[in-house]
Length: 241
Image (cartoon, rainbow, N blue to C red):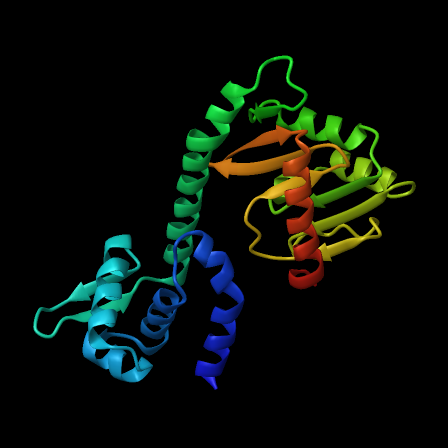
């Protein structure tokens, strides 16, 4: 029964983990060690039906990441780190990937855009983020697609603006299950979202957290708006409750 539940869980998260370069087999081996306790590479190989060579290679990779710890030598035994420590490890990996994407793609692309360009990509600092959110929600738009995973963003003032917009515009709001937004009519709940964002008819704001500070990337490029809309629609239809 437990194995079926784990397989179902891995099926649901594998597509997200793959974005971070984490394979389903890596998650499976970590989950086995977490649930079963200390095991050798040979025991894992026999239990999961994976070749010893592949298991040993993945154990080495997981140990380098800090997901597991090894004790003894011949044979060596492996233990999984606590699940909360793993989540902190993955969030750090995500932050590093976002920083890398910003450095390798966003910043060079921004530099290539002339001041007279039709489209812009703007880095929003933490001090300007709240004003940018208000400005974006108050601009004329036929739709406001909002996914907020950071409860601290959902202040009373921002919720009031979203509520007001819902009377005359298409408003869809995704928030964590712990957030109470009863008066807004079109709301769905989703936990473990990666980041946050606001999409209007003509712009998209990506909100990210790095070292406990929130900042953003704002673009009015149609391609980015369309891509963000497709991803939001996927969350709305397939992930949210």
